[in-house]
Length: 141
Image 1 (tube, rainbow, N blue to C red):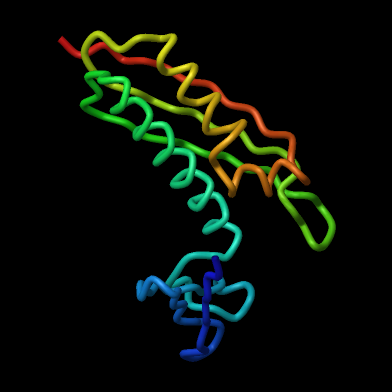
Image 2: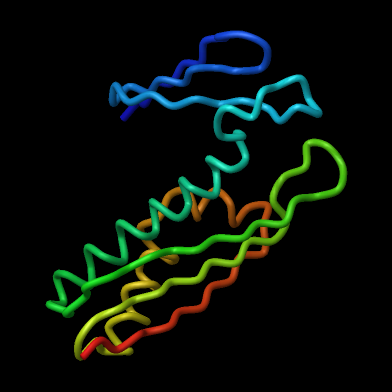
């Protein structure tokens, strides 16, 4: 399955990115690198891609397990290498699950399946980064 993406220079360091899905976004550099800070940095999008990939896996599995999730977020923090190409060397992922009667076993299993089987973004990043995750369940009454 091929996926295509394109970026087109707008001005300065600002680019408009378009993917084969038809969605667009803005990329830009900060002022220090000649940009206007009008969009995402490419390496930010990598972390957002990871959060989205694993988040979609986990919430899908939790729904199949009929867990009463009413709120869900994935927080990601990445530390990059000091020298170019400055890849991510360490990535910490935190899952926050809010709901009623959420099974800790279901949460742990859902995250494990995402990390070990389903999340393609995570599988790629594991090749350069030490990746760890934590989760917390917030019971809503």
